[in-house]
Amino acid sequence: MTNLAVVGGGVIGLSAAWRAAAKKHDVTLYDPEPARGGASWLAGGMLAPVTEAWPGEEDILRLGEESLKRWPGFARDLEKEGVTPGLAEHGTLVVAFDRADAGYLDILAGHLHSLGRTAERLTGREVKRLEPGVGSVRSGLHVPGDLAVDNRKLLDALYAACVNHRVRFVRERVEELPDAEAVVLAAGAWTGQLHPLLAGAVRPLKGEILRLKPRRGCLPPPTHTVRAVVEGRPIYLVPRGDQELVLGATQYEAGFDRAVTVRGVRELLEGAERIYPAVTEYELVESAAGLRAGSRDALPYLGVLDGSVFAATGHHRNGLLMAPVTADAVVAWLEGDEPPEGTAAASPARLHQKEHV
Image 1 (cartoon, helix red, strand yellow):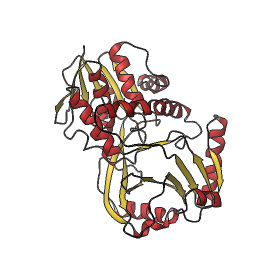
Image 2 (cartoon, one colour):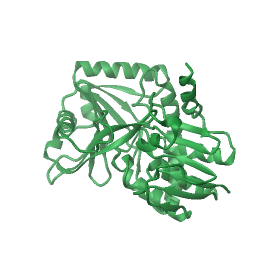
Image 3 (cartoon, one colour):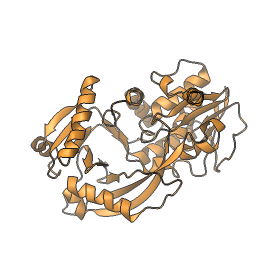
Image 4 (tube, one colour):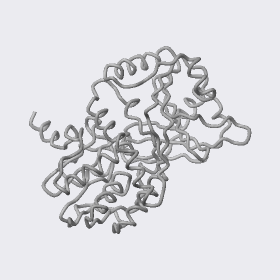
């Protein structure tokens, strides 16, 4: 049994703490607001490695798909702990608003086809048949294998699972490594402040997100996750089981600023209105901004920093998606087992390599 300190109480830290404690390791988790204070609380909940794919990012796709395969079992194990994580299997619909945006879909579809991934091209009319509430679009791409999860139900489930396995919670922000036999750094955008190798390698990426609800008489939210490119700007609409719609997300460099801006809200609502016009009559129930943990190359840092410290950070837009594979990598490290497939490319050892180039 190892005395393990996990720094960070978002989806990555909670997942690692739960899986390690379930293996009978002695786990303490450090976070001032576990399950509430970080980017995980504001996430859209898409588990969509295929529709996030892009040429040149094959390592990210490989790691994301490995984690996606683990998600059904991960969700079932959480349900056994007593709280459902709200996993949905409605797939993703990617749509293009105009001719230029359709070119983006052409590149994405060609890339996925070259990798042997399933993605069905749709005309604008076929998109409307699949999702009648979608507005006038040029074309679409249907990816049936993508999943989605209710991020807040997931965090509640993970917190409950940690309590079940007697994880201790220290509700404070740490500024130096805790005294433990092993340490997992999973503090998201703040992780770069905790280890010299990660200084400057992890940075905050601000993203604004809105939550909407249809009022009486409104068209209900779409049945699929709808991703779109509107005049070059990405946008997504993720339906929730309680008739809520999550709309996101802007992304830009703003340091640790978490203020919601008028510009960000306007861009999201204008884009959503063009793709799903009914949202103009929805109730705006929440606006917030979170800080994703960006890495230098969009791959997370997942592996040993030194003999007793393990990095689990830099997941960018893919924290929820990659939670299962990250937690399993942590347990493999603690148990001396072979790490999951796809994690080798995410090793923080690449930071050493770039320093010597």
